[in-house]
Length: 200
Image 1 (cartoon, rainbow, N blue to C red):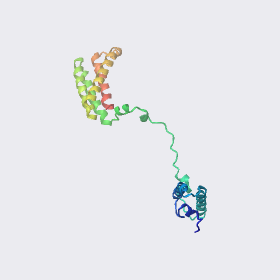
Image 2 (cartoon, rainbow, N blue to C red):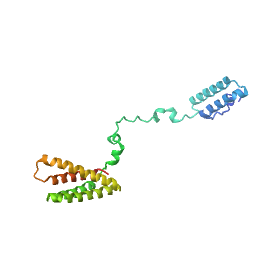
Image 3 (tube, rainbow, N blue to C red):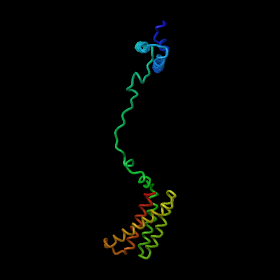
């Protein structure tokens, strides 16, 4: 090889990768101010090396990586545009509060509150006792889910209060012969069932 060989001028070999050739060019340009080599000579050597590499590639002397030869093979298929699901649009605190119960987690509270509803149906004097048992059952069922007794107590208190208030307001409107206490307790049991089954 002569002194004019562009590979020698850049300080690379014919086996050097494209990245190595680029790095060598950059190094030579940075050194050009120190050793007085004109930048044009470095650029000419770089261009000559690139042209030689292109010629070798066309002759099949350089193996081209598959991804460079056929970039369409590597391109990932575009993801279909989709709107966010209901779960993704729901605020996190609501998602964390709503439970996806199994069948038994719905049926067991339903059986408990149905039995207490039957007890309260025997007379208005039994409604407070049935409600007390219902509140205890709700505390137990909610606390069993996540072990937070304070939260279970708060949910139970809100559910009982809401059920009694709404039931007391609805009882006269329904025109039922049942005492308002019984209607209020039934609605409270329904709200307690919803709370213990679908909240955590």
